[in-house]
Length: 262
Ligand SMILES: [Zn+2]
Ligand SMILES: [Zn+2]
Image (cartoon, rainbow, N blue to C red):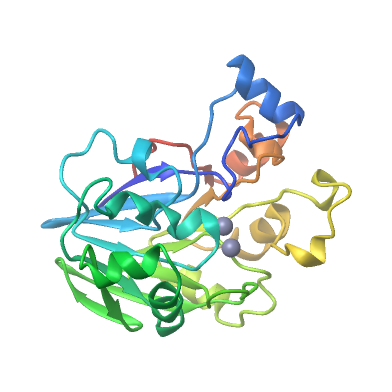
């Protein structure tokens, strides 16, 4: 299986609209690479699976012809499903693209426009459940703790080899974390924040995430190849030349970037 990182930023992307943070300004000057919202495409021998439909889907999918063979959605926060707007009659006019979703995500899509219309008109076809066979592999959805205003949240396991886990509130709240991460050859993990100092003025209890040094300490000894993704626009890892990026590299981990192939 081949994985391409389509987007490596937290939901708001980089640069983030309205932000004058030094990292956003460095991207605007062209000194650092821009990042679109978190998404992967996994190519099995006979299919292309899109993991999350980000709001940046139009540019992320621009150099691919045809639609994905299936789309897996992790949850109902804006960075992870709103790219579905590009599947409707105003755009790709897709026909029956399978959406692999939890019952909670399916209920959300069925009951809110414009997603409801995509389902009713058959542009997408909801496949509801936590285990999906097909496309030359098995896709499992693993429930993880993450603020659930609209839907539950899952990590995605493809073929038991690739783990995609862009959003989690904390590792402590998920007792299976070490076992699950350790069971995969490659794990794309939530690296939203490096430290709580990044976002002064925001109440972190409203947007909890593990901090990268904690993640390193917990999983640094595993054989799993860890790729850090879903970077907030304030995360020093957005700068490949930062000391934090050097720390990650020294541990044998990598920081995702848009277009990265694994
Ligand atoms: Zn997110
Ligand atoms: Zn989220």
